[in-house]
Length: 220
Image (tube, rainbow, N blue to C red; front, side):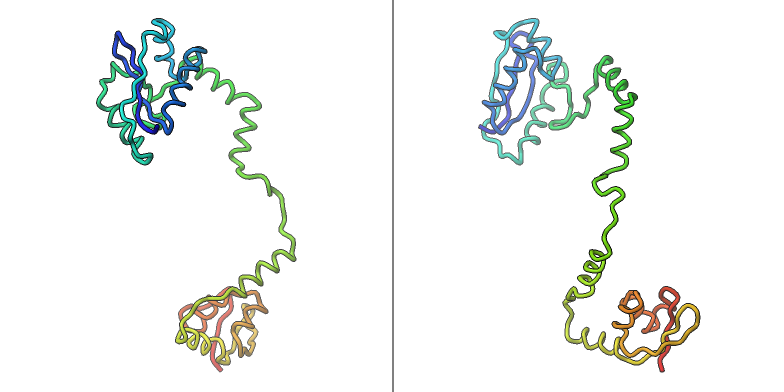
């Protein structure tokens, strides 16, 4: 059964509100943790230890909630219960917002964070994925990747293809960064041979850019 449930202390009416995809299994989890004195909600655990299991009720508040509406419905019910009658530590359903660690827990966390192991862990986290740290891609792999990109088909209309064909086939004079002049008949081939970006160089050829990597263009 999917829905919203409550664990209620009979005498004080203090209530723990929760939601679950399987309410029966969730209640078994709560009951097991409470009986072991190991429940994550210390307020509920202390009350359970003080008054005993017989002082509590487990109630299904809504057993027909769509999965996508669980947290919203749980939040609506949480908001309807006065703060002094709630066991819930977190004020927002499904998050840890509003939860405060106990001083002794804070001290333990601080000690762990400042220990050599904790500092080493933080360094590893800051470095990110180290699976390929220092790895160098083989030249053959680089060549295959480059060729695959060059061979990748671009879906263009016939007009666009004709326009690009005119751009890339008109004879030009390319001027390299040192001022050397080179006659070019195919801009695409020229770019592949010189490791240049065909799109950027075509912008130079069209007069929309002055240069690309120092290369300039003029028509014959």
